[in-house]
Image 1: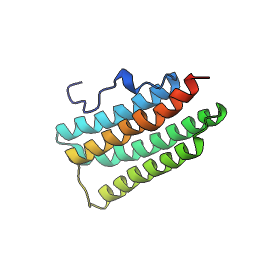
Image 2: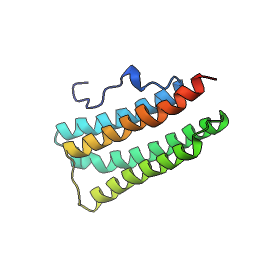
Image 3: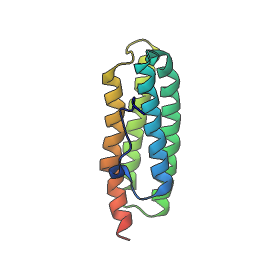
Image 4: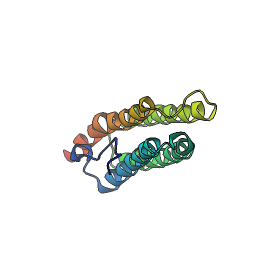
Length: 134
């Protein structure tokens, strides 16, 4: 898709199909929002996409934490704290948009992309490396 701001790359794979699929779903939401922005419908689409992004992220984070708990990941507590921080950031973004404090912009798009990419490439790769060595 020409409007993708955040194409999936193999470097994002944690090697767990269920988690990779969920990460791809989050990326698809961010790309959909970017496509709406390019079509001039960013502000109209943003509220719904941010709501969906918050719900999807909460569901994904819950699934991921459950899987990590089941597999005995040593960094689980810190990972859950990171999930809570990320969820708060996106919830704050959603609130700021709904109150008119922010509008759809490339800055918001970059924040969402970096928010997810950094989490996957940093925090999620920590558990991927640990779980692969078992």
